[in-house]
Amino acid sequence: MNQPRKALFSMDCFDNDQPNIEGITYGSHWNGWACPYFTYENGLIISQLLKDDEQWCIDRDLPVCSLVYDPLEDAFIYYDPNYSDEEGDYYTPSIIDGVKYYPIGAFGWCWSEVTTEGEQV
Image 1 (cartoon, helix red, strand yellow):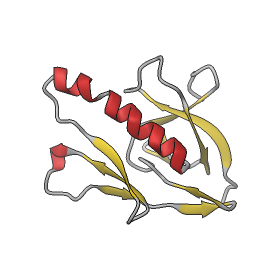
Image 2: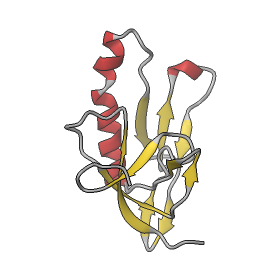
Image 3: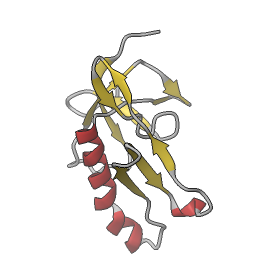
Image 4: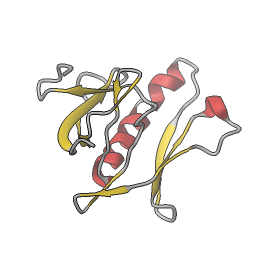
């Protein structure tokens, strides 16, 4: 298995002024998309970025998705109202090099690994 390495990640749905999010990767891909892991702190940033996009969804009469942290489960939970019969996607942590990392959207979201300038790798 590859060793994890630090990298920056973004998604097309993020605005140009939104930050690239630091995480780690093993170099895995799902349908061509990156499969990152994030610290708790960066998970909260992702949660806020999605919350900031709520108005975009509301303006276009689209369902509002959310990512919340549940301390009892020690998991980030992604709720998508398009699938109301589901309880959400749970992203529980792995300990990697002594740090908790959450695979938020790994193997399911369209993450891209990017350079510090925001260009796709």
